[in-house]
Image 1 (cartoon, one colour):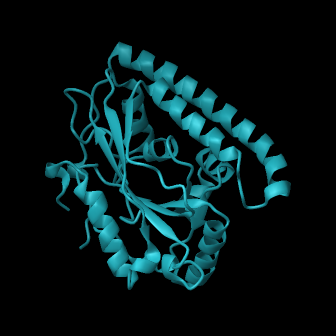
Image 2: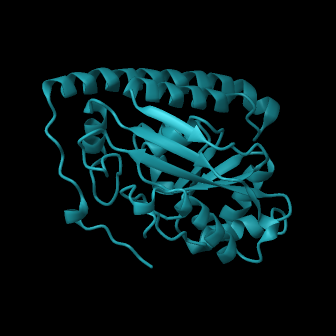
Length: 277
């Protein structure tokens, strides 16, 4: 199944009140301060960590977690998690609804995002993404073998890589079918017998009286305009993160069966009205 977002699907921006502008200014300033401070501390620690541990990062991921937890305090957005984050080495897959997923999924679990290569060149965001160990991949079949080798190296080093198998962000009201191609990397001879995969469901609840898709960021929506709406919101809504029992890659015959099982886990934890595609 394919899904194309249409401009008419996108909710129009709400009018920002004087209080909203004040909140957006204060929250935005505090977020910038905590992000830049966190990146600076992380880079200093990584300069010591890298020559000693190489690919392994026993210390710096905690900085990322702290920054992301503080971000929810600044936003005054309620955060709740259920289930137990996986401690074994392996991969994590989740539904993708918003740029807020970066904070949401890093706040509880030590993970490294897998992102499209274009993000590496984005001003500011690209620099921070590289600093926290994001894995960048190109949507090019000619690079598939090199990318699989990169995944293997990071996963075998103990990193837990976070993938968004839907291939795009959504309005948060649905889970799109998981693309099974990336799951082939989990079933290589070097990984299938040692790798576990954990599914995670992310559920955003809009602020009272707002469009239920308030936190969703998709299609051609402007990042800046959407961020401003979130920063200005009062009161804020909430996010709920559900960690499902991990599965062993070796227990599945192929990538399609593994992808389908994980998609079912993610979709099944959504509210009933959001379990459609």
